[in-house]
Amino acid sequence: MGNWVVIAEYYSDVHRTEFICRGQETKDQALKALRAALHTYVPSKNIVEKWRHVYRFADQESYLVVIKGKLTQWECTLRIAELVSDSTDPDVAKRAQMEDGAAEVADGPQDRIPPGY
Image 1 (cartoon, one colour):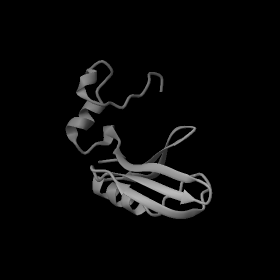
Image 2 (cartoon, rainbow, N blue to C red):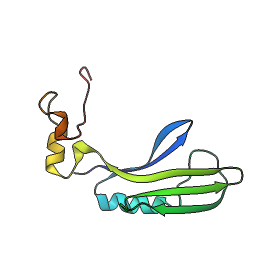
Image 3 (cartoon, rainbow, N blue to C red):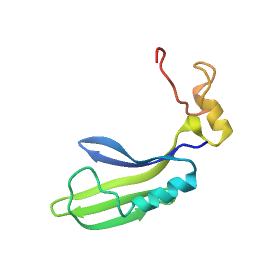
């Protein structure tokens, strides 16, 4: 079972990631939630929106959203991501759940639970 999320990434003193929508089972559901958020997402900063521009990246799975407020302009990237250990791709999920030391770094991304948790 997949576990997809929609996230917003932006810079505000430091790089930040904000989860907009969690728990989507398929990539298509996540893309639908992403496209719905493009015109409704409001950053946690208090911005009184005057206008909004949405730019699509070539991968069509991420967008740049520019919001013009009364005093400032806000830019963030909205995109989808999949939890590696819940991937519907069996090879990705299997590599992600291998024990420490059982797989080399070149085998791909892995979720890891530190010892003692």
